[in-house]
Structures are given as C-alpha cells and as structure tokens.
Length: 235
Image 1: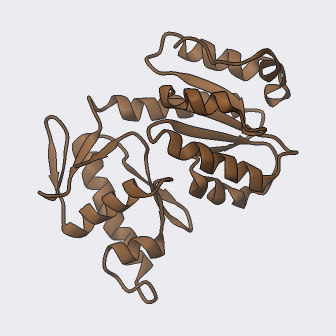
Image 2: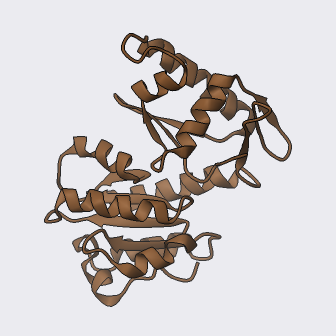
C-alpha cells in the first residue's frame, strides 16, 4: 500500500482529529496487499472517481453539515465506477435509520462516528480483507450447471438459489429487499411467508459458509439481504 492519498486539507480536517484516522489506517495496513483511501463525500472530487478502480477500500466521510440527498447522489455516482471497491461510509450525526438508504445507494459498510470509530474501521477492514483472502479467487456462479464453484470445491444449487445469487450480483448495490427476493424465489410478493423466505436464504448462506468458509450473504435487519462485494463472479 502506497499511502492513503490524503491531501493536506483532508488530512487536517478528517473527523476533526488531525491525522488520527489516516495515521491509524496507514500504520495498521502498511505493507498490506490492498489499497485504502480516505475522502470526504462532499464536495464531489473528480480524482476519487479516477482512482476508485485501483482501490480495494474507499472510506468516505459524511460530515454533519452535508446534505443527505447530495451524499446519496454522490455514493450512487461512485458505485458504478468500480464493482470491486468496497465503500465504507463514516457518518457524523444524522438519523440511524438513514443507514438503509446509504446501503441501497451503494455503500457497503456504514459506521457511526464516535470515540471508537477508528478502531472499528480497522477491525472491519481486517474482517473484510480476511473474508476475501479466504479465497484464491472469487467464487464462480455457474448459471448453466446450477452450481457455485471455487478452484477446489463446488456447491450444487437449486434454480431458485442460483437466481437469488444472480439477482443480488446484478443489483448495483448488491442489495435486495424481502419482497424482491420473494419474487426471485417465485413467491407471491403480497402473501409470502417472510420467515420461510429467511429460512431459505439462511440455509443457502450456511451451505456456502460451510464449504467455502466465506460469508457471502449478509442480512439487513428489517429490509432484506446484501451480497458481500468482491466474492462472486457470474458465468
């Protein structure tokens, strides 16, 4: 890793604590086989878009004074520029229930700013990188033969399970609601049993975890599920 790409102003203002997060991140991941950058979400910065494809993680800061609609718009603008880069959003103030909107816009992780924010970010990056490091390459979803494969293992899928994974991967934010997933499973979106749907997804998650030892699908409480970025390719 060749630094965090911070300019002097950003480094001085980040989280109101001069250089603290940048220093921690640089120290923790110095020599790590991935690249991290830290930026404010607003105002939009053209250089972020240009370097995004080369990053493994982009940490974005939403300040208290930032307009939420503009923040969502900027995340939505950045998301399609790199399908593999994990966007981690740090939020100062704002409503906690806004987290769902950030995830739907394309953020992969949302962290509330606080005293332990820097440590939490470091732990998250460690976990996410460890998740990806468990694979020599992303899992391959074989839609023709209905299976999920790595270089050495394979999991047979039902057509519905394959369709769910494909639908999650096709969504720009890798996020689907319960209603969207129910439709994917062929259930009536007006009358389906949410607990039955959750059990179906849970069984799929457990099978994938037991064979490949990676957490491919995560639950979004009260909304639906998301696919962890960078772990799946579709054939």
